[in-house]
Image (cartoon, rainbow, N blue to C red; front, side, top):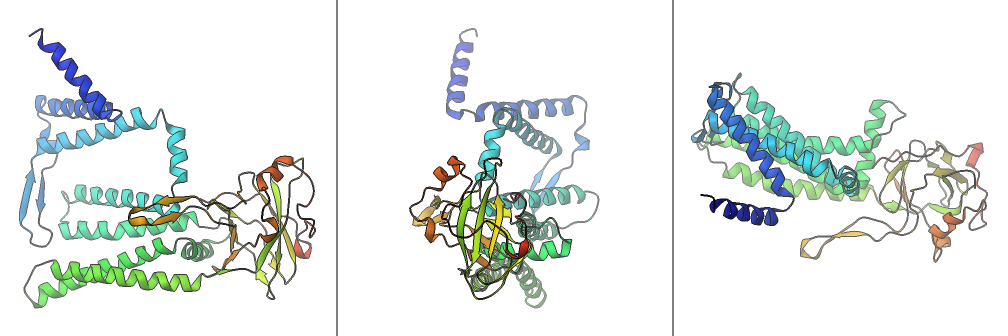
Length: 389
């Protein structure tokens, strides 16, 4: 018996070495589950937990029944895993996790939070079904609808305008999301349309053909999802073509300020409305523009950009399967107007110039020497933009 302990200790060390940082999380989850199950068995508390019957979504037949003790163990294991993740993984690496999260594109954050919101909705319905009659089909529909809705809501929340009425903020947020997140928004719209058409197809097929097969509904939903997504994406792309009517004329940084000034000129023959506009730097961070003015042809406008605003070209990208890449940067900043128009700031006069070295000098003068750093029409420079991404 005594010789058995070193062997057990050796096996535990091997498992710990293979699992690495996951090992303490699994141990916490297992200990929590065993303690909860033991307390429930000892004090006869399993009647407080529900039993779960997993039925076929369209057939209604019971496929699997999870008894109360097993439900208690599984719920306690999940709770212990979440507790262990917070204590052993998130708490010691809080700043690192936040930095990694902020580096994730907006569509990735929105999709993740949308999935989390959909899971919460499903869990609430599963609990509520023990008190009210809620079918499995309702639970499935809630999940399929809440995920794209929550994803779209997060995107719109990230694109909102703070200093304006809510209806205007939502409208402008949609215009900006349509231009910056056209793929994600198209997938969201396509998914909602596919879910609605799939359930309509299933209802009609069960009513008129006396068949409860889900194959026609799934087929129609998948086909319409692809078709609607492509159609909406092409429509968004046609409505959000980048324009080249604005150009950068000067960059300077006063000695007494941490922010630096960027002066732009309207090179087009039309007046550009910059009220409630936003600007995105070359690392895809979005900021409030801060200058509400109509910029006439040939007029200048100066605004204050925060110190972290990136102006130099950025070719960062994510490598995707099958040889695809996802850009995480751009050649030049872009301005998004309240109507959804996108203006790529022309930076021909900065070709070959190291913007970082210019900013580090802190010189209180125009970089190019063209144009005065004053706003058009007597407007004062805007306040420091606040990051929106």
